[in-house]
Image (tube, rainbow, N blue to C red; front, side):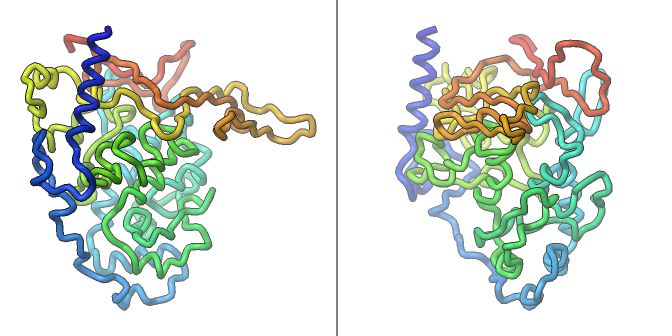
Length: 375
């Protein structure tokens, strides 16, 4: 066991040691292979257009739908691309053992964390790339229901309103936002992905607002003292189809992002280490801990929800670090940081519970990942 721990430590330190300081170029990083990537210092970062000069974006917008209509007046056919994505549909076709190919995603899956979106659409769809998904009547075929700016706003002023089914907060100046669009940044992605599950770093444990201004010790790709990469540098798009999936919802080996795309299948000088790539995922050694900057939610017990104080008011209790450890509407929570992962073999297949499934056994093993050494 000590040898395994030592090996993981050596690899992780090596990963940090070979990254140069900020402003690096393709000529300054030679300790390990990097392909299919253009360093920021080598790119032309000047925007090709200035949206603030477009007449169609000068008009007073009465609502968010009008902004989308203005976008589509130039970016024709983009609505069709977006409507084909899982970002829009909140589901994709996946193979489930015993069920075949079924639509699967936030739209219809259940879990023992956030449970599901049914009945809470007005709140949950604050993180949908659309406007107005408050219940089952939402029209997924209406182009102006698309929220273009949640991904493309570069003004830093756009935000969706709490409990407003994806509509922008009333304080947002949509003209300023519409005239300040550009390529998606980490800030754009983080608006939803950092805050999934109702709080910063709650849901994933490795997606955290700290990544907006961190060191390489927190994230070797996004650190301010390294390349300061954006999410879309790895999660590239073709016709708005985003590469990369979460294993928890996406079991099939389709459209994934891999380390080898940039670092090749032989990133190490030692061939014995390279042979590990056949069976062992890169993150097994290179992510020895997660939740490095802020704690993540490790336990959520809905069964304790509903308690009130002596005055009949909802209870809100925090731990010593300010994380809520009890909410009357949600129950008890346990947080932890610098979490050591649990290691399992995974063959790319999983079982998921859908909201339409009949559950008649206790306890229920939910969303199980399958795999074995020989699988």
